[in-house]
Image 1 (spheres, one colour):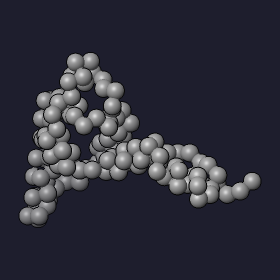
Image 2: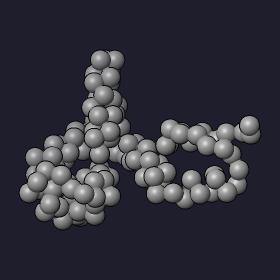
Image 3: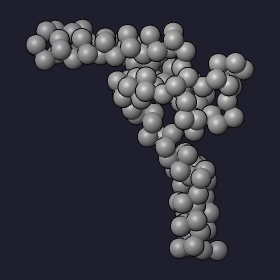
Image 4: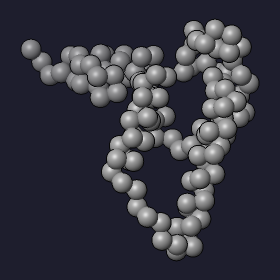
Length: 127
């Protein structure tokens, strides 16, 4: 029994040798999992900018689901989602400006942070 390699992105392990590792790291499943991991850390402004440049996905709007999922080149966000996202971006910009001006901003509670984190994780898992 030889060494085993565990991929944190894909949550799986396999025998560690050059051929297996190279095959896994270039695989579609690994690349998708890696992309989803890094996308979970993107800021709202970057997401909004990207979604505004895309055209809406017709199949997603008609049926509520798309065969391509997160790999679709069209946007799966509704007008309400885009409005919420733009409001979030504006709120982040305002708080950033206030911090730069030196205004006292009351720190958020742990419960607020946990709630936001749970929402972010649930949206990342649904995509």
